[in-house]
Image (cartoon, rainbow, N blue to C red):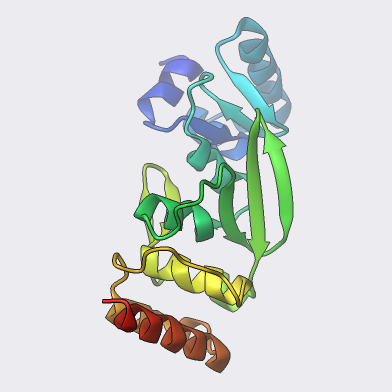
Length: 192
């Protein structure tokens, strides 16, 4: 039988919850697993990031951790918009949409959780799973940001697929959000 660390490396993930490790290792006794995890952390084979969350080493994926802190959640807003080139200002924090509002710092990285109604945050449209974490599409991130920050400013709207954005507005059931999207689209058309 493979040892626990080998099993964790074989999973292809870099961050694990206590429950993930229990499932991978098939250890059903919580106290026994807790002792094993303590031992592996003390030996330097695992890194405890926070209570119930572990990484294989210091080069774990921060976005993978972000989606494990509070479930369900997904990466969105300025994190996605900056990557897509829609917002030019650098935002070092990882922004998530969740069922609660929090700001946490873990291992030097800031995680900002933004609260959106659960009917919206749990809707899978415009969200994909990449590299073991959930992330919003550019259009979904744009709408999330406009929903959270009505006066948000965007530097470059070229990457937006406007048909997809309008299709995703049905998730929010919010007429003022649709009007804000209309205004952004009009502004985009004027600057072509």
